[in-house]
Image 1 (cartoon, rainbow, N blue to C red):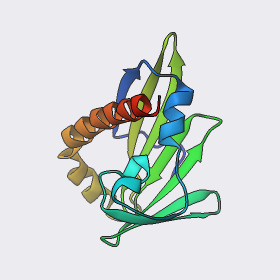
Image 2: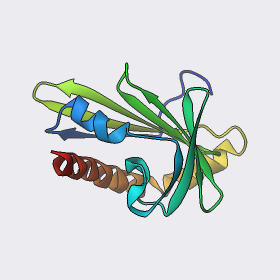
Image 3: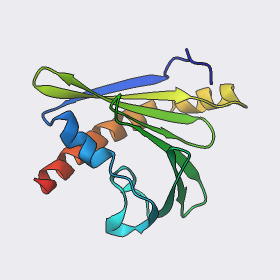
Image 4: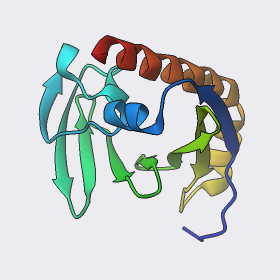
Length: 147
């Protein structure tokens, strides 16, 4: 992927919680097989998966056969999720006065059929934006449960 590729979309939302509180939920990924209530936070909308750490990233195999690749960068407060075809999502946390800004950048990283992925993605922006806001709400709810 070229280094200067621009995101298709950027979504942002503020949270009252600290970067550390959010990272404690968001970056909590372990190896193993998961289902139901023991799913890692970022995958609670899935039925089951198997996660293996390999070469500094997590490879997540889902029950339906697809997989994703997850990288956690604690230094830059980022979590990256990349699918097998076109999707790459980069979540970045930054401190803004007395709140944390949570940013999601969605990239089209398709190597083949890039135009088709871009066309398909046009119809998914509203869904991605809605899912991002629900995602932030779920992070905050998880932090409240842990406190």
